[in-house]
Every structure is written in structure tokens, then in C-alpha cells.
Image 1 (cartoon, rainbow, N blue to C red):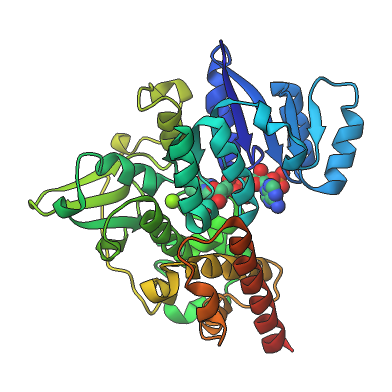
Image 2: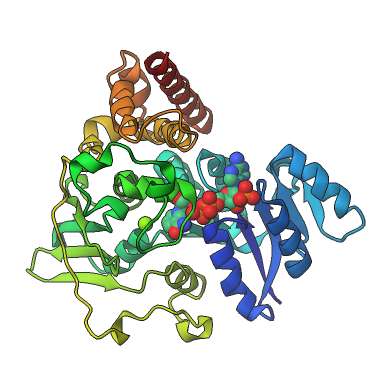
Length: 392
Ligand code: NDP
Ligand code: MG
């Protein structure tokens, strides 16, 4: 029997990469369910090419157009996840690749219905890992983080306990502004921040990479997923992006995972449990073919990347991470829409954390889904308020 596949966020960067891997072996995999938000032309192409049994299109206008167009088609088009008879379904592999907090609820629901969940959606790990962990344990589902750093930490720490580990370094490329002077960072526009030197990714994560917020989110993600002492995690600049995480052991040895800058590698290995011949995918990058390939590691310049100073247990340990995530989503969106400057992302985050109500919302240890949404909503409202006040 073919393995049943669901991809949440199939039109995105991770979604498309995942599809391109499954596509190489459609004798083994059946693309049973896809979901997307608003990319009309790609949704059309994916319906025609993969003939999924279900396609969930969450944008209401695009949903109407697609629904009308495929009225007589075998693929059922739905507008939201709650219209899906999910409890009657079982998936072999689900890829969670929606961007933002919108990915949380569907990922939680699919955890109980999937044998293996490939987790890309950072927000799920940051806001709801305690829920995913509990559900996956109960349902015996395997969760594999596919963000390259977490995929690496997962591999590297398998045979070690906290007592064996001195530090875990999460590498950062440093983004497009690593070699720019501090003064030239004043007039950054979103089109500059989106240009990542090494990776091809969605808009939001590319902007987060340019100011190192992506690393702040990734350390929090690691805090939640792995059971190691939080103080052991460090961010280190590695501009080649070939080493994704380094585990420094107490015995003096360090281990790291090296792979080309292509998300197909962690995704394919997560799908095939590390038994995959990557040449099947014909990837173009091969750093060993270069005449010279250096690997450099540098300390983070906190003046240039002040956002890393927000990574404190006081702010991010408990539900403060939900606030950080939500406020950042609002600020990045406002930056893309030219409503705020690049520098304001950091300054307005600080303003949210100094709000009189911050503590009240930030101290929850294991919030329920409803509580997560309440905290998320407060953070969004507060951030909008701060933006309007500063702009006003
Ligand atoms: P993209 O922006 O490329 O894609 C996002 C996907 O989510 C699209 O399919 C999009 O649909 C869908 N989507 C957007 N808004 C909504 C919504 N409100 N409701 C439902 N679906 C929605 O993102 P990426 O693929 O880059 O990233 C996806 C996730 O994976 C993020 O959490 C990111 O942090 C994480 N990640 C990404 C990496 C990467 O290399 N790209 C690496 C590691 C983690 P549509 O396009 O049709 O509107
Ligand atoms: Mg990453």
C-alpha cells in the first residue's frame, strides 16, 4: 500500500521542496492532502499534477475560485481544516510547513492522525511544543524537526545526556548585512532584507534571518524540543551555512553536522529515516567540488544584531516566547508594508517586553491552546498599539 502523505503549506518554500522529494517516488507515496492559503496559480498546478483527495484553501476568495473551477473534479476543496473529517483519517507522513501561528492548530490536529510528523513550522515548536509532545507520546507518533539546525541537534545528541554536553552551538549565516557597517543599516528596505546569501526561503523567515531573530526563535525552539540545560545553547556566526549545529562535549571532542545549503537534505532524510541516496534529487550545490572551501566561526556582534540580547530566560522561557513570536510577526509584516523602519523591529519588541502587563501574560508554563491564542492576541494588540502610538 502506498504511504499517505499530507503537506500543510504545500505552496511554500518547505512545502514545494517536500513535494519535489515525494514526487520522485509516487509509486511509494500518495499525496492525499495538501493545504495552502492564497497562491492561486500554484494551487491549480498542484491539483492537476498530484490529484490529492483533499485540498484546503484557507483564503476565502481564492477558495471560492478554486472550488468553482474544480466542482466536477475528484479533489475535494475545503475552506478550512475544521471541515475535514480528520478523525477518520490516518497519515503516514505529515509535513507541517505553514508559516506563522496559523500553523499551530492544524499541526496539533494532525499530530494525533499521523505516524510521522515533519515539523518545520517554528511557531508550533515555540508556542505549543508541550502539547505536541504529549499528543505524540499518547499516539505513538514520531515528530522530526526539519529546521536544519534542529535536525542536526537531533542527530548529534542521540547518544548523549545533558551531563556529557558542554555547549550546543546553533550557527547563523549572519544574513545579507553581516559585512555592512552599523551606520549603513539605517535605511534598510524589505527587498534588501529578503535577499539571503545562502538559502532560498519564504519572506518572513528571510527577514528574521537578516537581523538574527531567526536564531533567537531557533534557540527557543531548541529549548522546547531538547531536554538540555538552556544555558548551554549559544549562537555563532558561520557565514558559509554548511555546518548547522555543533555539539561540544565535556570530553573535549566537538561534533558537527555538515551539509549543503539545501533544505531537501534534512527533509529527505527525515522522510526516509536517514536512508536516502541524495543524488536522486540532482542537487546543484557541492562545496567539496570547490577549489577552496573554508569554514569560519565568529562571535555575534551584539551592536549590529541587538535582537540576540532579547534571548533571555526572563523573557522567553515560558509563555514569553509566544509574545516574542507574535509581536515579531506583527512587526515584520509592518516592516514589509513600509509602516515601520528596520530598526523599529528591535525597539518595539523591547517596548512590548517593558509593558506593565507583559509579566502577567509571560509566566504561563504549559498554556492550553485557548490560553496560547489569548496570549498571542494580547501581544498582537499591544504591538499594534505601540506601532500606532509611535507613528501617530
Ligand atoms: P513560505 O512563506 O514560503 O510558505 C508558507 C506556506 O504557508 C504557504 O503554503 C502559504 O500559502 C501558507 N500560508 C500562509 N499564510 C497562511 C494562513 N494564514 N493559513 C494557512 N496557510 C498559510 O514559508 P516557508 O516555507 O519558508 O516556511 C514555512 C515554515 O517553516 C515557517 O514556520 C518557517 O519558519 C519554517 N522553516 C522554513 C525554512 C525554509 O528554509 N524556508 C527552514 C526552517 C524552517 P500561500 O503561499 O498559498 O499563500
Ligand atoms: Mg534554520
